[in-house]
Length: 80
Image (cartoon, rainbow, N blue to C red; front, side, top):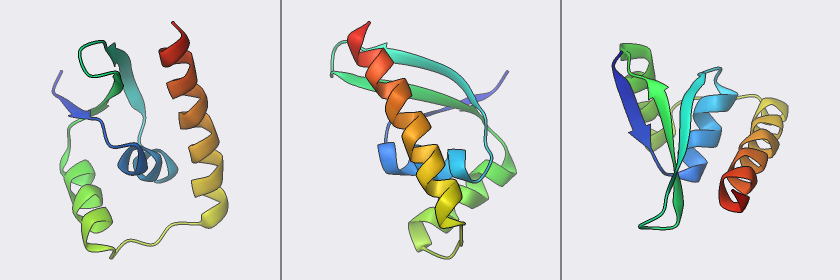
């Protein structure tokens, strides 16, 4: 199982809004952050490059919904 570790909140929200599934979430106690894992694939790599280059378009309602879900996940990670 090849996983990609991502810690940037905005990128995580973008990927979730694009339909990528979070495989694993864990708390990084050393740096007070959450580490989110996605399945590593060519599609994931292309979406990350699209995010960086601002060349991918997403539906704003999908983004807002994903942002709420990721924010809840981070809150649960922080409180545990």
